[in-house]
Amino acid sequence: MLRMIPNTVAALVLAGGGARRLGGVDKPLLRVAGVPILARVLATLRTDGHAIAISANGDAARFAEFGLPVLADGAFRGEGPLAGVLAGLDWAATRGADALLTVPGDTPFVPVGLAAALAPSPACAASNGRPHHLVALWPVACRDALRQLLSAPGRRDIASFAGGIGVRRVDFAVAKCDPFLNVNTPEDLALARAIAEGEKG
Image (spheres, rainbow, N blue to C red):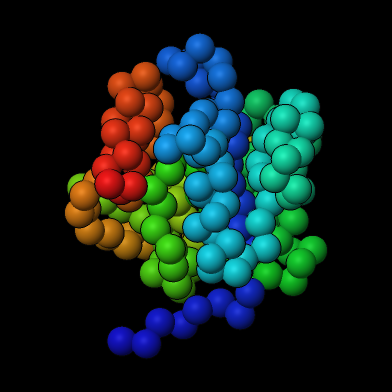
């Protein structure tokens, strides 16, 4: 079946999060195979030709070496990852994009061609029977609904919002590793490093 790919897809790397189980470090700046995880993610997204921004609060200078726009959550800071998604959707709209691909900055093995595999939006990736709501292709047109959600009292549950706008799950095969393995713990980091070293071998 022919997939209808949006005319323009922008990409956002979600580089926020407290990383309490890793001592509060910026997880995307942790090194796997000698380079920051963020550099691995960006290399994959650049292969697909996307315009890219980074979602992060705090001092944007810590990401200066990557030479990309760093988007803060603005008025919705503290409201969780959906605030980062909204900032990305607003930025994508200024670029005339139809859809926004979001990828967490602690996922070192995301595959090339992710937006095309997820199209059409809205859709999220799934692996091992588990959805990954932040590995997703969002229609830029959903930003008003998301802004309304964040402006009102209530839950900030990403799965609930995704369900409300009809996000589909797209299953990805797990071969040598889960393509959406994310680094949350020292054990995850050790596993990611071992997998990356195996790739080099």
